[in-house]
Length: 161
Ligand code: NI
Image 1 (cartoon, rainbow, N blue to C red):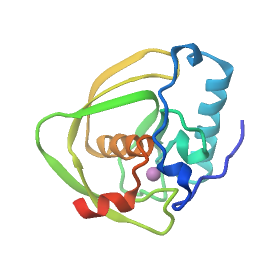
Image 2: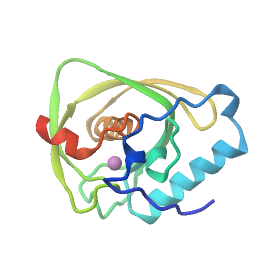
Image 3: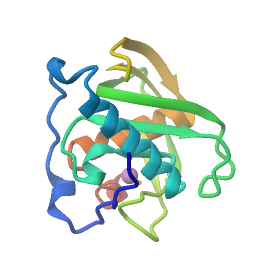
Image 4: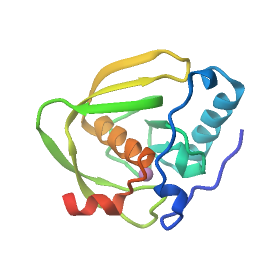
């Protein structure tokens, strides 16, 4: 386990779409190590979420969670969640604008329009299937982290705000 450097805007690796995690990788020490690195790196940087490509691992794995976070003092607590191969679809048409930051885009806080409610499907760190609805700040984080898996960064979302 290690705290890894977080790639910064301008690094072409942040722009590459990440690959799906193959089923053979589920339950392996290699995947557990990646998740540990994501957890420790996110904590060390007071992040609310982190995607594997941000630490130069081009796989579809993200982590998020909020307890007390000085970067998001008004955010509701969200239990730590690891998503492998996440996919989401909007539920309804409601959208909401909210401020977002990103560990890969230091010094930038921008209002971003996101779907208010979504259906999320993914695999957990333990290999279980998740299929549930998500809303509010958690839905925002899911959309932000999934953007990373597709090489999309906050400045790309400015136009939608
Ligand atoms: Ni980010």
